[in-house]
Length: 218
Image 1 (tube, rainbow, N blue to C red):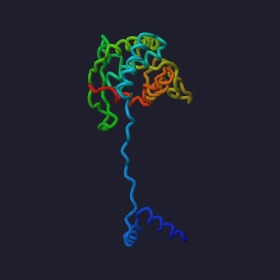
Image 2 (image 1 turned 60 degrees about the vertical axis):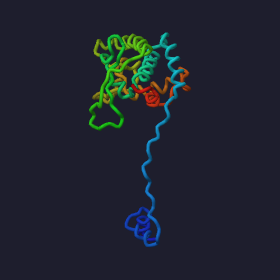
Image 3 (image 1 turned 180 degrees about the horizontal axis):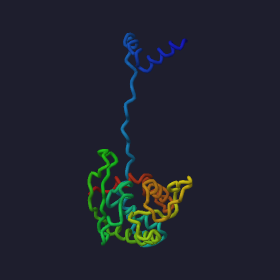
Image 4 (image 1 turned 60 degrees about the horizontal axis):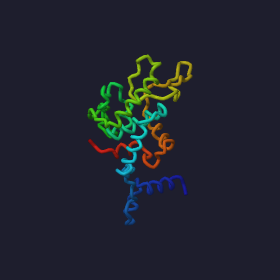
């Protein structure tokens, strides 16, 4: 077949100028793939959430490491406030009430207006469990940010030198030190890597967003 013949055949298959040939033969046009809706993964049921809260209640009474304190506090906050990962990393230390009873949340839905302006904000109530967890996390956080000389304002901070940071004029990267603002990717990675070590694969879903959607709406 000549090149012109190949092009003509391609047009017929793709539904271009050759489409009338299908109609002349009494054939329907080739179907086009319709966009498929995104299927959300199911959140944990209430039984699993009850077991998870029991685990949190037992874990908040002990101290294993700064990472453990941060993980317990994060789970408690998500269950109480339905906060997204991006909203968590945007929180500052002054968003937490002095008595730990409430946490200011700036809602930024994933499919918002596209303007970058937060849709709503609220002071969400924290349960006694989350309040206790936050007190332990703030104690660990104070040690992590001690070398920053009071310049740290992020509520959730990194635990150790983690990634390459920003490249200097010589092209070399300076690692980000402990106590720096936790990034969204780091928060999600921390959630994913903590499920197995703490024996929670049967209670915590693979995605943090699934856990958020399982929490009751206020």
